[in-house]
Length: 75
Image 1 (tube, rainbow, N blue to C red):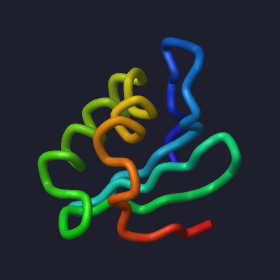
Image 2 (image 1 turned 90 degrees about the horizontal axis):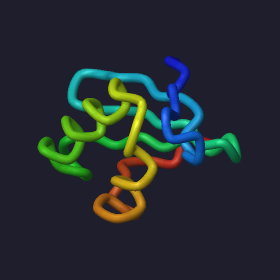
Image 3 (image 1 turned 90 degrees about the vertical axis):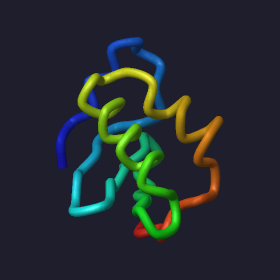
Image 4 (image 1 turned 180 degrees about the horizontal axis):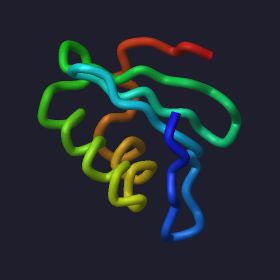
């Protein structure tokens, strides 16, 4: 997994990993969630990937837009 840069310094996201049509996000509480095109939507997943690479805004986007639209809780 890639370490999330957390440029604002207050994110709940720790790390992320891209898959084909998906993103897996690890939060600071060590929970791990899979978001994919089928459940979360292609546009949302691609936005999450862009925010992850930018190192800013991912946690906020998840909490405000995606909420519980994850494909699986992995941990």
